[in-house]
Length: 333
Ligand SMILES: [Ca+2]
Ligand SMILES: [Ca+2]
Image (cartoon, rainbow, N blue to C red; front, top):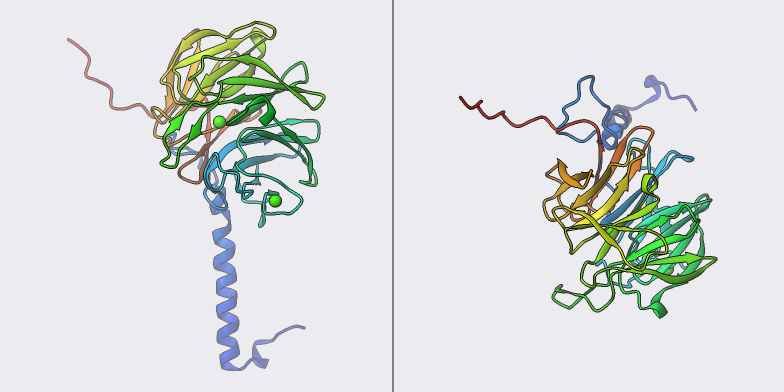
């Protein structure tokens, strides 16, 4: 029904104007989640920020086919089996997409306690969940698999990656937390591989290294692994009995990606940084990132997604955009 101003009483007109105003205000507020890039960017601000709908975000994963980011949310304590974890989708520029989580432990037909690392193989999203690997259909969000790694003594599954052999590789930090939050290492720092639905131990790392990020390093045909409780950058060649150490960094390692050119970029809780590792040396790329967890990466845009675990936020940074330099020191005479 068309509404003419003449047919409205003064009160109704005021309400109509108010509603229109609110609607306009709402419309203008919408792009907040995805800040448009100005012509000249300030390299010290993220390209996009997403700060709504997230609760203890641990991992971000880019899906180039669907042009969405997946964000795993622990929603509470990292080791707690509370079945309240969830996964949301964000648009390519970090826009909030889901009014309800895409995948939610709160649903009766989903079990998801504290989701961390994620990887895609075909149409399935594989998610590390304390001592199990959960599989979800990427179109429907329905749970399609649950693989129990508790019999292999998994205690803190962390990152997931697909190998060039088709195996699903999962790190186990092997850590536990007591009632006061103190960390102990009752489990083994190790990597599992799942083939045809069957998990086995792939390799064990030094006991207290707390294996965290894992990424396939194609140029070297090997895995790269970092530990939350180690400054070492580990390498593991499939079939080798042990890992080797490629170099060191600040420690507190979490997310890890390896670029096509062989550069590795990882997040560090120790110095709140993104750090680049190349030629055996770690160099700070960017600081000021509080509790930076498992990184997502879109190679087409060279855009890195950093979930800030304790800040309930995901920041998107172009990787090859250098931070504005601090004031240069005066040249020495
Ligand atoms: Ca449930
Ligand atoms: Ca992690």
